[in-house]
Length: 103
Image 1 (spheres, rainbow, N blue to C red):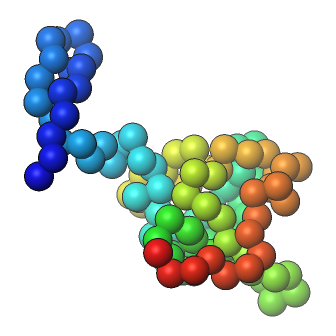
Image 2 (tube, one colour; image 1 turned 90 degrees about the horizontal axis):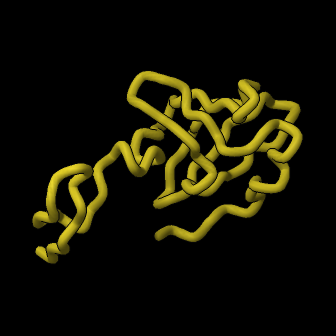
């Protein structure tokens, strides 16, 4: 396994795995059933599918489902709603209508 040197806060440098902790990659906590809110606290839907670093937002029957990229997640924790890094007014800028390819 590859290893790199990484600064450990106020301590000195030490060896660490190159894989970041889950806390630094909030999208790793996004799973089917996760509720998703915009940055300004509007509920936009629920995750219905995860495909690689993309996740699908299930919408009510009168609206189209859409995909979001993992880098659109600002924060997420197990058992809590995921929060996007955009406000509701800018949500269309990060939506992906076409199904992303399998990673």
